[in-house]
Image 1: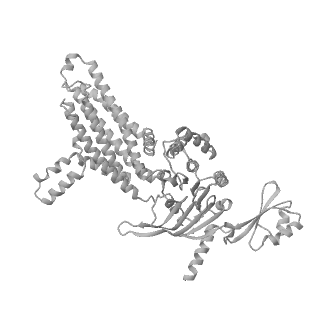
Image 2: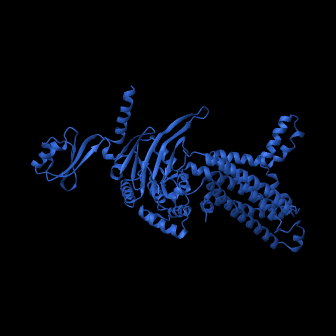
Image 3: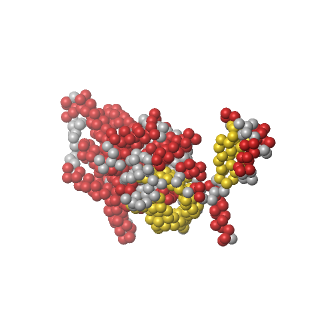
Length: 268
Length: 313
């Protein structure tokens, strides 16, 4: 086994023993389960509510995991000086960055998987207890496989957020990395507005700047297909693939920048 | 095979200080030093002398401003050189949620050791540093001294040819210091090259074939410790067969009673042993040991610094 998978395996091992992670996952699973009760309060809309809440919980708690573990991946190693021992081993700096990233993505995959299983379990129970007639009133079956498209895109979006957190953590403190990552996450959801900036302002400089930012900042809105999935509108495989390809390109650029910065750094 | 295990050539490091108008501060100033295979080199100096910076440059944790560092004939930071070295950082810290055994297996894996081999190696090393019983405890529950021992164990996980130890005695209690001294001695006996930094002279006295002394980022002297001009500030004499009264009659006031009727006498610099020993013999007092008390490294440095500044003044 080469160095990168070993570092990834260690990050995974360290993460799954982190109490913060357990609390987040437990809370997310509880919220998904509680969505069943909330669903009961809304006549006829219960399945939609559970899907909506369940997917939102997966996204939000996945975001917390990606940011809070992602920002610590490198900066905590530097702050606590554990990086000194690690870099004295036959590890190249880019291998460390890629290994750390792969480890957190693996952690996220397992967590998103657990949350997805919890969501399908609640929906499966729902489907099992309701009558055939009631089930026919739903827009889509409770355990709709199309929901997987939304879950996959949530996961891909979290991979992108992790790369952002990792990028910031190669040169700034954990606190600043968290603020910057959350900031970029919020901006990323409103990125599309920058494209239409010319309809709001007249200054050509402002419009050009908005256009540059539109292309430079991550566009996270396309990853959110919860509404389509909940309302049984199709999400094509091509759309999932194209959005994932965009994420892959962006992640590649972020990791390249992270490796570049990290390779130049002095660990005083 | 490389002639030198470690080679520093005009190694210099400046750190920028300040945010807006940063100015360079020289941490290491044109240091050149060769260490031969099998040598135990004590890299000595007071705090801030540039010892840790040198080790970080050798591990390529920082990049040099100028000059070069080589380990086993390869440039510092080269992966092939790293395969053959071990490094204990100053005040080491590892991963809270791993056990000592897991940490060593992980680091062993980075050297390409198979998990079973790495586990066996971890077990041997943790026994060697006295942590065999604690191997399955998570590192978050370890004391500073225990982390230091884990640090030493992880530095040996790849059976290295060259071992770098940055202040290996810090954080250790007297037993830990003795054990570490023994361990360095055994590394020397196994033919490994050891480069260890310390600000405590006695650490080096017992172990080093050679020392290099750093002051304010510069290498001020190298050589065998015995050949360096450490001023003798007195002697410690251990005797038996007499009594406190007899010793007092010789005007030796700094007398303490040790176990088994032995007396420890502090001889001042103006009462050299060749004056006192005949008198003791006349009183039928036997000499058990005689150890010179050298000035401390700090005093030595202060003297060197004063000597350096004197011509300029």
